[in-house]
Image (cartoon, rainbow, N blue to C red; front, side, top):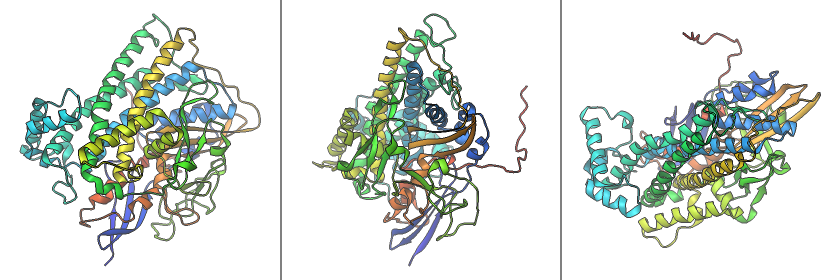
Length: 566
């Protein structure tokens, strides 16, 4: 008998996501992904000065704010064909890579690890055995028996108080949980340590961006950071060395803990390398520009069709026609007017709400396509594109992760296709985090090398009469992010954001093709329809950010809240 399960809202994500699945004989047979709020930022931007768009767009989200600020200024700069000083590119690169590292650490340890780790089981662990296991896998200094015992005592305090604090409302004891108590204790210890570690990345963003979230230093044409050698109020060598100190701390955790934990835990869930396969088309954009024109990038981009790496086609520059001409969005099954798939420069966000219709409109998220095909974006796409392009960092850390998984599982071989799965997305994110760490170090060194001979950080924009168009993109933590702007007589005529969670969470498109979330959920096992942990595992593996994909807009301009500054 078919059972309908509705999970609304999906928790431990940003924004409001509803997932519906039909389950027959213990497996998902149909799936619907629905964003439950409307994004209206694009309408707010119409008629405004393009130079201020970034201050609005980073309000798409309260977490991944920097990515929208940087992509917005890139869209306007590319419309103007405006060069950006190299120092500004490098400062932006440091901010975005630090943000990506923070995002990836938080996603695994604090948002999704509890889908796989039975926290209560850790109470039964032998702390000495847990430490012995941890020290056999990694040289992380906080893996010793003292740390494991202290973690267990802290957990006992939570339980003894009758409240599990951050571990409340978990699926403890669920039959899909497989880790031994010692591995659960090790994961809980790293969960708590990661709370402090991720803050090092936030401090890097705050030092350069003025604050975080919602950085204040970007501008169309560069950044507002002043560079000097001695003045205390500018970006000087003291602040650069403080950033380096945080980078070193992040590196130790990412490479000795995150890149070890994910494949080690994955080795206990090898069946999940066969579950959660998505649409198999992968899109990633190049990032970390190394010149003033956005034609040389440190990280590769491109497209892979049907999981076949031999089909890899690169995207190489901001004005690459292959990316620019391939993107379209359909509203046929979204709560907007119109059925046709439109290029973002012709895109529209006029609402047309109909309530949830299984065969009609059922989401505030649109359905993007790349040359008419659905595509998955995110760390899995970034890693596969990186490997296909021959990027040495992606190849090195992927081999390292697969080696750990083989050592723990005892298997002699794990194919690359294992990545195209629910647990594989987590492994890909850990690999990407290690690549981001190396990239962060490189960008920091290049900035230090460059400021000795060049201290420019800003080129003033000049807006022509008439209409111009631009697109800015960024390989954000959740995947390919692009902002598209049409400017007429120095005012915004149209603005569309095609964000990572739009690519992955979108509903059926104009041709009825299902999106990555919906595709990945098909054939997922569900042991208990009342406790659909398996559904959450696959959805969480994408790291949803529905706050970015959709937003609220009050067209009556009612006052929502008044804040008085004292």
